[in-house]
Length: 244
Image 1 (tube, rainbow, N blue to C red):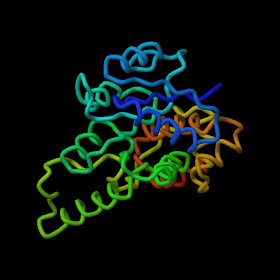
Image 2 (cartoon, rainbow, N blue to C red):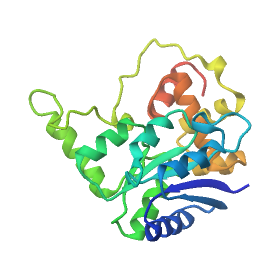
Image 3 (cartoon, helix red, strand yellow):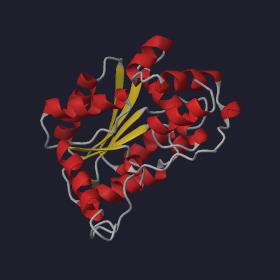
Image 4 (spheres, one colour):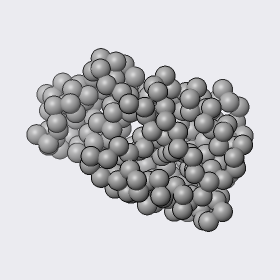
């Protein structure tokens, strides 16, 4: 079954370009649905179980979201899809803090600049299968600068007023926190074992004979159940509890 991708972009040329980027980035069969505005995107999402991605309905696995749209802002859709089981990536021309941090707070799993070269965008999208957030190089540098400036003296972030994006924060690993591993499914336990051994998402998919997007879904579920936000935290907790 093809991996379902939704591209929300009002510019037809940009939609075609992003479609080529997606097809070049992944070896799996891809089924791309295009939307030029929020209303159309919402209709397509409704057909795949709505914003909650209801069980039994084949949802989109990857959603590319432009920010400036004819009928609103892409951040509205990101907020609506906070519980939707897809990797959500902003694709935009805006590289400033005023767009970057709100988008990450709204649930974006990555942030790519459409002005980047085709090869750069492909490389960044491929990071998904390695469990890394896809970020345009300029965006990665901006994040580093933001946090470095925030660490000067008062420990406060500079003027943006926004919290750091979820995937860049690092929480201290609680020493005595028990893992509710009874809640993990057998598949999730298997994925956790491979994660702890350092395998990439692509390698885990190959070893388990499943799609890499399915592995990504398992990892998200593991993080939620174990209350962690990174591979390192999951591996440490699993090791302390003797799960791997």
